[in-house]
Image: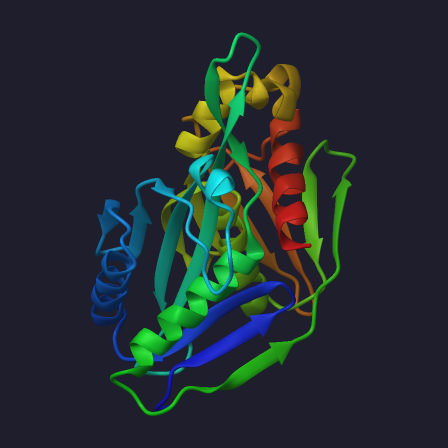
Length: 266
């Protein structure tokens, strides 16, 4: 492969870029700075970048000034070695805040839904940026959507079943984790594991009572760590939430995490 390729899988998109993951990560960093994002955190070894909050800006369209002033955007990018030799895969997800005025005129920032149109527009700009050093970009590759079902077994373990093979499920889950605001601290594709924590977004939600409403009485600590384990079943993939030691999570928080991933993928 010699050109930057945009791949679409239902509502999800990512780039396949020629080159090594570390070099591609460095170029993505340059792009984010060019787009006037400030880098809040980065991990070169894991190929992850996270920007600071930035005032909302229209990408390819008009955005009302008053609306823009009341919104903030943040971007997370993950770069992984591609399945094809000498390529990297770039995943980009958006998080948003909106300013809400409470009684008495006091304003607070609260999470708003991720914006797929923003993600798509920014990813296309990134494709053009990376293509400036590569041959012309290839057409978008469309892939079919997927059916996802949540069920609970007699052992009390809740699982999410994706009606597709492991490789595509791995990409979908990684994308959904980033888009939903989870922090991926480590990953091991060979073992089918994402090591995550709930992240700052959930901690901020907790202050406003959102976290408790989301997870119920068993809210737990927003900084608590979990493992998302993907089991390859051939034609389908089963996803379960685990504690760091590998034991399955049997409280409602496991089910809620899976539901959030499912909602994000739809």
